[in-house]
Image 1 (tube, rainbow, N blue to C red):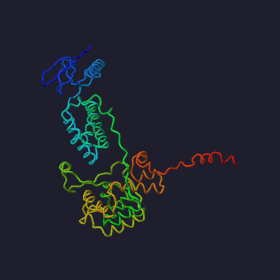
Image 2: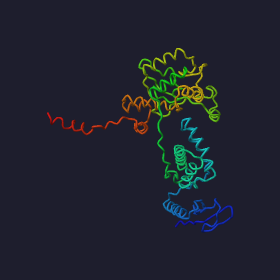
Image 3: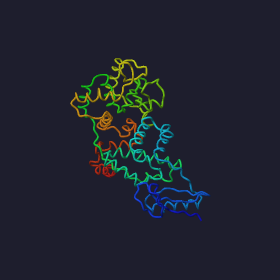
Image 4: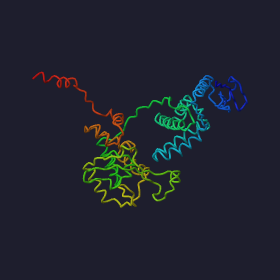
Length: 390
């Protein structure tokens, strides 16, 4: 019958016993078991009960013949391998950039020197709490951090580094509901009045289509269906970091690249209103020719840098108009509130925004939908019983 042992070990003071007896942070309980002719040692935790449970689990797997030998690896080594072998090949460029930030700014500094087997649900929960307390990270950032870690450790399990994903049972921090900001019709007119071309038409297109910033900057004249008054959203434009430039080693398009939109559902057709059509027709006459067929470009036909546009045009226009400082993304919210105000069907709103599901649209904008339950009881009675009155 397979047997194993539990021992407390510390590589600093050399302690080795059946009971935990030193304060060094690296000391912990190890379990030992035989795998064929070899004896294997596996670190568990400073909690003897956890070590006993883990040893019992291994003994059961050995008897059943289902035991898998894990490949020990430090978190930092695994994280860089995960970015290179999975993320680079599988996710969109901006998602890869996001993963790199999460890993290198937050996860590696805290977990990098730990073996994956040493990462426990409690350690992850404590990490989130300390980042919230000491670095004042928002609940949204902490949730993104946890989501990234869950995804990484899911692959660690698939790659035989872990038996279970310790992040699965961790409770994400409660997300404070943020007040959504948008411009009212009078404020829209003020913004447009105090904006200079060609950015006035850019802002108008954002307000009347709900397109994301990258989608607007990647819009080409060939995407506009003048006959049916539709704008096809087919791509997004983003600017590369130095690391991304080195990876691609492609100087043909400079520091920027085209990408597909955010998701499959983001490839969509937006309705072009008469006023927007008129503005775009005038803009086409006045705008410089772009070798990339861009609708919105610099004077020499090159793509507009998003951050420069915000700093030099969008925020100054808000100041000149006497409006509060909003995000450019709030123009997308503005478009949605306009559709809701004129009573558009929520399914149509979903299609215009490119949301993957109607639940996403309702979760974000459901509180803005008009209440329609007044006299609902009377209407039900009339529908069911009015035939009896005849």
